[in-house]
Length: 159
Image (cartoon, rainbow, N blue to C red):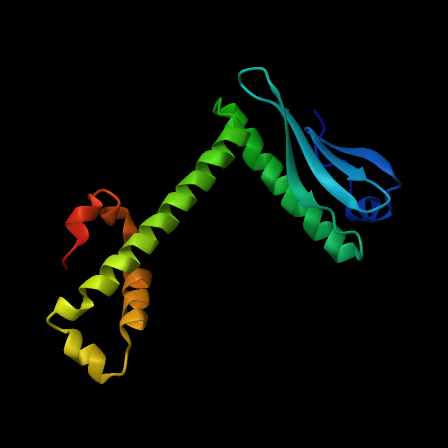
C-alpha cells in the first residue's frame, strides 16, 4: 500500500473531486472547499470514515501543514487498528474521559468554595486579597485530579 502520494502543491491545486493520498486517506475537493477523509475497516469488519478536518489550500505552507496533520491522525488510526481497536470508539471514549475530568474539576471547585471558610490557613489568602472564587479556581488548577477521582465525592467535604 503506497503512502503519502500527494505533495503540498498537489493539495493546493487539486481540482474538484476525490484524490487518494494512500492508506485510506483522501482529499475531497468541492466547490465550497476541501476536507480530508480517512476511510478504514474496523476490526469487526465495519467500514468507518473519520474526518481529520479541513484542507486549507490558501497558501502552500497552509496546505502542507493541514496534510501533515491529516497524515499524523491517519498514522494514529492505523496504530489503533493494528492493536485491534476501533478508532471511532477510541475517539469517543477519549472524549468521554475528558468530559469526566471536566466534571471532576467542577466538583472540586464547588467543594473548595464551600470549604474555604473552614480552612485554618485561609487568613493568609484573605490578607493577600484573594476572593473565595479566586482561591477555589487556584486550588482546582493546582490539584492533581487523578487521585480525587478514586474517592467518593462525599469524602471531599474537608481538606
